[in-house]
Amino acid sequence: MNPFDYVRPASVSEAVAAGAAPGAVFLAGGTNLVDLMKGGIVRPSRLVDVSRLPGLDRIERLPDGSLRIGALVRNADLAHDPDFAGSHPAVAEALLSGASAQLRNAATVAGNLLQRTRCAYFFDPASACNKRQPGEGCDARGGENRQHAVIGWSEHCIATHPSDFCVPLVALDAVVEIAGAAGPRAVPLEAFHRLPDSAPDRETVLEPGELVTALRLPAQAAAFAGHSRYLKLRERTSYAFAVVSAAAALRLDGGRIAEARIALGGVALKPWRERAAEDLLVGAAPNPEAFARAGKAVLAAASPSGENAFKIGLARRLVARALARAALGTPARLPALPGSVLVPAPGEIAGEITHA
Image (cartoon, rainbow, N blue to C red):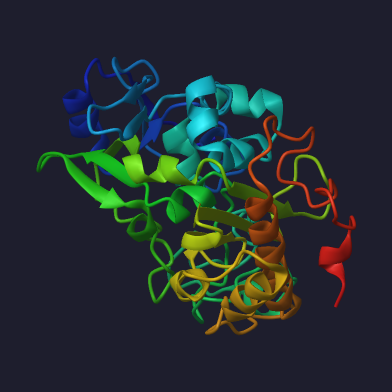
């Protein structure tokens, strides 16, 4: 392992100053960073331990009805918080569908947003990877790439973002609060992650030394609590990242869809919002025909980056399924296998989503 300095700042301002040094990285739960360091993928010269910064481990309901989630709130604590799970059930379902219970107990909200891709070529120092070493090339382009991006990718990188948590957050217009040397700022989560373009090593809009301090969900997000779901299709039911995932949320009024939210995971280097499909649903009756139309509208600009054309059709069917489940209503209790397509809702046939 590369030798590194270790510092534990006592305040956010101290952390920002320490994190601005060349080669510095922030450490919180460490569930992703430590693995990357062990594998020699990331070689920081300084670890800035922010895990004990005061005030960043709170879940707060603000006077305007919005919800602020501190950057150091643990994934498990957030998912199991009764108030949060009740007002944002799809986000709780997404959290509980990811990783293992042990990892959720350690991983933080900010760390989930900032986790790195699980592309096998990124994790292999012997492979060419522009994300790990700019200008080196991308071995995934001609390699095993069925799990890779089908939209937003470039010739320099075809990786995907691995987070489950971020998918419903993008659908619900979450905002990231950031502290930096120039002062605090807020960025919509949809704009927080960068597409690869010609600089895949730049994964977010964070500048050196900037620290994520909180995640904020607007008051309007709670209006979807009664009809929102998260579905995750994976190659094994437990401890696996999504091949494709979908968050769907509906607001119904008078038997019609007044508002819809749709986002996809596993298809790009960022969670992918589908506004065109959302607009198709406004004013429609919540029925299978409307959901099928919306599903067919997603990923309109998608194209395979390798042997992954199947993801496009799969995502369209998964969106239709997620919308149908959202229309049935959020269950009073999360299913034993959160996010799983293998646990059918009433009237569904388990496994039908995988049919051509």
